[in-house]
Image (cartoon, rainbow, N blue to C red; front, side):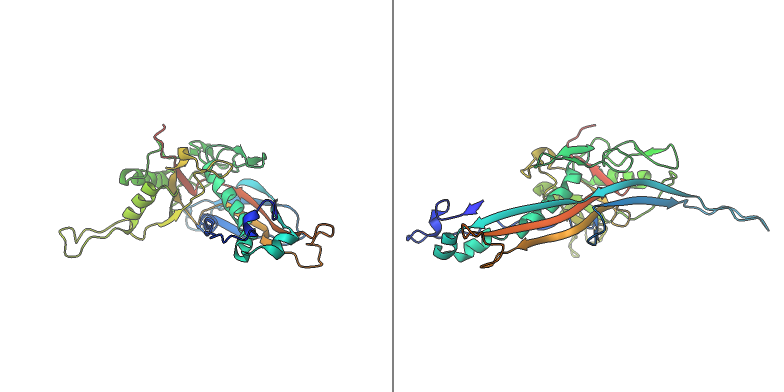
Length: 335
């Protein structure tokens, strides 16, 4: 897109125009949620990374007098390859627009392209949860995105497989209830009974994140459970809130969107639990979001038109290896 006095005549006309501030971008909730583990990738080290899991058995074995100790079993889990992806956005500003416009603060706002790259990263991270019941989806650019985990199944599945046993486990709550006290206890039971290592043994890892979309009812319900207190002088003063400080609430605004980033009401009630310690949701940063700015007489100025070109760039990769750290309910009541 080019900013010029023809397409944006309000910038240069004599009449005074009062400009309102544009809508601020969504904060980077997903990247800083604790769900994602981030790794910087040095330059000149290739455009892929492989991530894998390895487990050892949970329990020691009996050793009789003078007997040789049993050898611990180890089992490598599944492997997932991360591929680098580069995103970009450009905007041009004509000489006339730069020298004749009366609203430089608006120009500054329009050229803040660095936000768009960060927003796309946030959207791509969120869509691994948005499309958790699928193994792939088509993004806004028409590209097929692989969102399967290491066992080749969707992130949310009732039949996840393990490498060291024929046992399977589920991480999607049966009947997909909306967030409520009973549903949260059902989700906690799913954590207790369906968090297994590669040998099928029960793991008692801490699940410390309660995540939701930004649906107001779901957000408020989560806050009521996690933050409510009783009046010390009231009739229920001795009643303790068992959920207080048990979870950190992560609101993920872009989960309930379609591939193009517009709202998707069918996903507004998604919620679940996650373990920041067990998480195998990896983000590799090849190129942090950055803004390329022009200057007079540089390559950022087109010789024949005098236009200045601004550009935003970023490069990253996303991969999820396992699913035992993640529990989800679609909130739609489906079996």
